[in-house]
Length: 100
Image 1 (cartoon, rainbow, N blue to C red):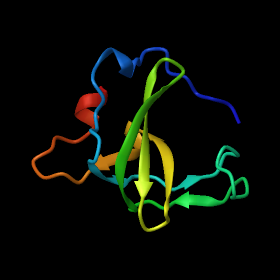
Image 2: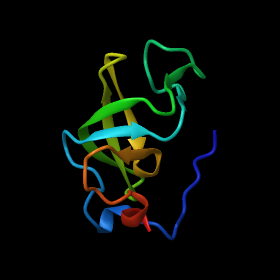
Image 3: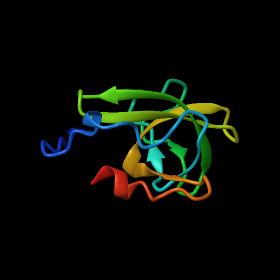
């Protein structure tokens, strides 16, 4: 698997798009890339439309925020980037406005 790195985007220069405890929806189906223990590579971890909550905020490649999303329905946490998520909090601007 090749990591696609967009050199023009450095999210870490600004604040995170999502906050701790924020309710979010997955915009993508996420499969195990081999970093999730207990599941086979290629197994679906999260389906598009699944609901979770932000439990941690980290970084990847010193460039992107990675959000630990607790999917209560499944009982586990998955790391996702901001463009894979949509806030379900009322009166919130779409994430795309923050990521441009």
